[in-house]
Length: 217
Image 1 (spheres, rainbow, N blue to C red):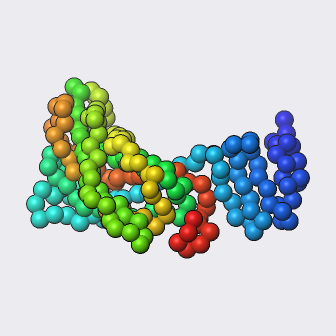
Image 2 (cartoon, rainbow, N blue to C red):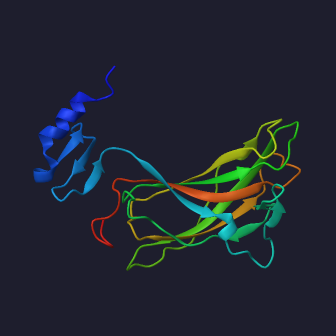
Image 3 (cartoon, helix red, strand yellow):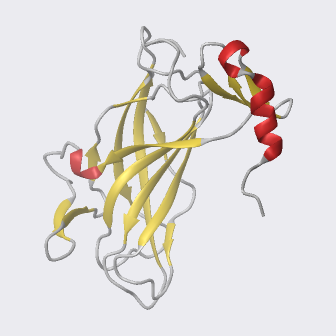
């Protein structure tokens, strides 16, 4: 069976992008190529990730996570209830699809194995601000459910925990984000050993490889 998509190949030849630009896809979901070669997605969905590692954060004077042995030669921060850390300020990248929501999540690793179900909970405090505008008031994002660790989950098991979504209707490239992550009491029973927390991630929608100008999408 041929590996060449001849329909797509014929579309590419017909568009003659080096002269006039064009797009590939349906009427409502397509990738557009401008006459200068700039590529953007319209209607199509693609996701990217912003990473905020815990290890680069600023530790408070008290209630700070413990730097704990993870393996023979590696260490990572473990969070007790009440522990928190301020993470590095981030800028919404030039590939960000302006006006779309931000999905906050965490990468957590178990610290031990238990025979019954356990639960964890975290929240974040955040501030967002556009270039040339005021930083908005601090807000809190607290998930409605615990992060559940099922019975007999292996030690050092990687867990994904969605914290929720922040509306992005007013967001643009160049917006800066400041945040703090904190472990809070869960509804369910907490594990005997505090979990390792590696990073906070933010899923974003992307529609270009970059921006057309330094500060303009």
